[in-house]
Image (tube, one colour):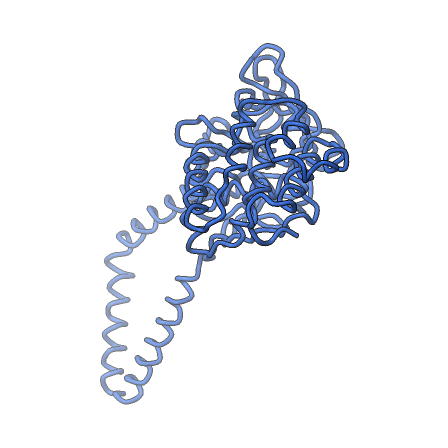
Length: 385
């Protein structure tokens, strides 16, 4: 298991070449025979069957990766800056390239050795490392990097504190009542007079106050995320829309007898091959309709950075069951059978969907939860639509 960084030595070369071969579905032993005779550039070029300029740039980064801690930290900071607006090192999509595998394998031991405060200063790098270790199968070659996740404070915790305070206040009031019985009797009579006055002369005023409360309750209900039926889906097939360059069509398994056909505006951000066998979170109670003459029966939820140059579907966690519904603590309720476009329910809810600074998908800060954990994205502080 990779543990300590000693430059690009023999063991590091083996990890890099083996990981790259696994990513490209090649047999590592075909490239390890002469590992002591060649540098990383030559070894990777042999695996890649030729020089690829963009990939070679990152292989050079690995070849020159420093050993001493101060220079190493500077190199990691440079990589963190490079990843500010990227999900992966090469390309505009989400699929890791050979460059991602080589760099991950080379710097893993340096990143896993960082303290928590040092990692917090490299948010884009640690987000990328976490993404690569989740989407690539490295077997047992690398120890998993455990990242500190955002703590979730359940709604209602402040209410519990308020109840405790109210309880103490009641006890104090009770003690005062016991020690001042004559004063308590006077207060009781005074209270009765006040109640009588309210229930008599001011009934109309009280009733008027109740109306706005009801209206507020109805308004909250209109934008409750519980109206949405969000399910974990598995994309079985994806292809380009026949008449729209910006659209892709997917067949998605959500645990029903028939696969759902969904049209998504993802063609600029990922290829059909990148989406195949990809888990997604999708809204399944939107009203079915045609998009450029192709029927769509759902809405794949995607995270996007501020200028919409990076867009990716949310990631349900490993272990989440296909078809299970995403839940939100404190927002229990029955989803609409079909969302009513005239009520603009979706338009009222989506402005409150976003990822936090750790990439956790949330509704007003409450995580998208499955039986296996929260849905996430490699894009922190992103809008979700």
